[in-house]
Image (cartoon, rainbow, N blue to C red; front, side):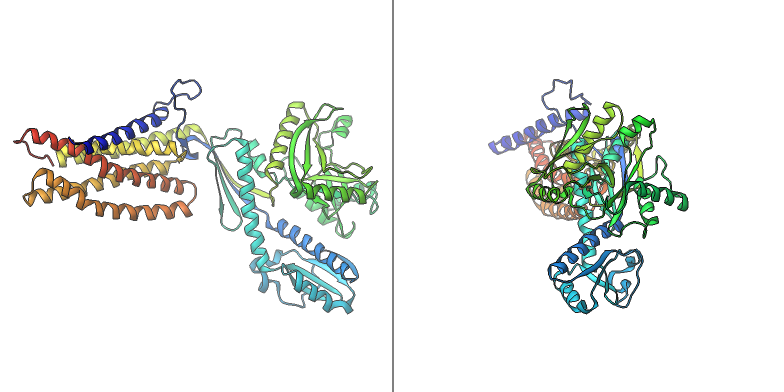
Length: 591
């Protein structure tokens, strides 16, 4: 055998040694923490194989659009004042009073019925100036309704679509950041339709904590308490009145945000238009003194957030030196520090509420200007272990970013590890039976040459598994189907080569020249077929999610290993076979 054959044989041996090392921990089911085996990595199993959590989350776009139109409207009012135009009043529209302009449905689409609007009341003589400024600097707004001295503004169609896409994309990124800190490997997070997000967390056992971590909006806002607008006792009285008259109540297990929304809707016209009711859901001091567990205290806050979590740079767990209880300390970025400095300087002796996800965590009185952008969030009552866990999770969601919208859990499925093991067993059994039938047929039909094909197929599967480990890809049940398909594709390549060799033998050529011609002439056909399959797999990988992507990844790896084994490895083994035939001139090529 020549030098070229030994070089090619060495490549095959190295590939076999490499793949064997990579697959031993998985196939041998080694405990990576206890084993002395030098390579400590296994194939990552998907949700359907190792169990875990599958969730479908819905995005509350009504709240998103309301927040956006409030910010845009407030910016417009600020610029109108800078231009010297007197604004009589402004705020979110609770009931439209006019529709003298174009119909909302024609401008915004089918969901315009729930389109939040912002009203601005001004001197009627300044109508054209207000309209020109709005059209010139606020393309994000549209004129949805008009009466004398009053505009009702909604979001433009283009900006609604942009906001929707940005909200979904940002939500996916925030969820991914949180899950990374939570320690879940190979999660699947993807959008579904216009307002849904699918999350798959393989191997997750603490389902409730995972749901809480993912679903918390962690929307941090700093709002001034409107003590001048209404006394605290009057606020309590109005809340109690709304509960009695409208039958509003909060029960453990309900969404607290729904209760808060119902209270605010019931009090429209009874509280200042630029204000809203928020609650300290659980005040530790009051609860400890009264022995109650469901204490929540209402606050009348200005609707405008002076600062938000967007200015947050870092959040860490620390301890209150006086009470020795966990707190979350935060640091603003330079822009946030400047805003914090300005706001606290303008509101000395006012109360500033720290609001997280619509719940007031504290409302201290601003005694002096606060520079440096540092602050802290106190936690609710509870034992030290519960408080520490809450503080850690809160720090995670604040560091990872705030979700731009509230997420509703629309669907949830928990797959147990026993079901995953059953899937592995049945999938492996199906693949094994299918492969054995293929092996039996190819051995019967091609005899000794079939044995070479079977050996190359076994190496092919081993190479696929090794690549999955090396690339840290996730193996799913469709991925096992992809491995079975790889065996079929590889057999097809062997059949093309062997039939070409048979044609050459029937034409009267010798064994060596027939094998050489068979491999050369079959290569173009094999390459063309595999490139076509690869194109389909790439499309599946780009646009598919979850199991579909897992199938595509396995299929692509299988295509590469098939070309290597069918063309390169088989040729090395055939050359060795031909050398043995040369030593026995009476023997014929068994094919």
